[in-house]
Image (tube, rainbow over the protein chains, first blue to last red):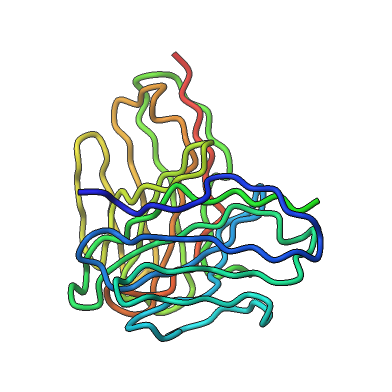
Amino acid sequence: DAGVTQSPTHLIKTRGQQVTLRCSPKSGHDTVSWYQQALGQEPQFIFQYYEEEERQRGNFPDRFSGHQFPNYSSELNVNALLLGDSALYLCASSSVDRAGNTIYFGEGSWLTVV
Amino acid sequence: KNEVEQSPQNLTAQEGEFITINCSYSVGISALHWLQQHPGGGIVSLFMLSSGKKKHGRLIATINIQEKHSSLHITASHPRDSAVYICAVGSQGGSEKLVFGKGTKLTVNP
């Protein structure tokens, strides 16, 4: 049983460009959360998707958007990249129907903006 | 003041020592998570607690809801335990937004 898978693992983008990061949740999980972790800092909540809708959102600008597909996989899109968007982007999956179920994290996508 | 405070920030131990990492939080929660992060970046969930105590191998986690405090203990520490240990709290049951502490960097020397 695969856990949470994220792609790509590493990527380099130029300031002003757009990026799409992808996440496949653990089998049986229907909820996907995205976090941004700057170097040396703790992860910060970006948003959470459930039933293809954004359910909660953290304090991130509208340049950050997402999507969840019917198979529960998710994408994180960041437009007009800034140098400060350089970070590890983590995807976490869980299940609404299994309250108390462990949250699973992917290995993350390292984004460098130059 | 952060909603989740961890101590110590850094911890160096000798192999075999008993390790304790502390976490205090200031908000109402439904669950507290202890997580492990290695330099490569991936995060592994160690425990999810809403009350009492859990044990898995050499790891023990406790939580005191009234005092808003949790501890992670590692018995007979080993160099492979070297990692960043993060306390995170969620405000809703099961699928929730997590608020993270700043982590404790543990180094266990042989």
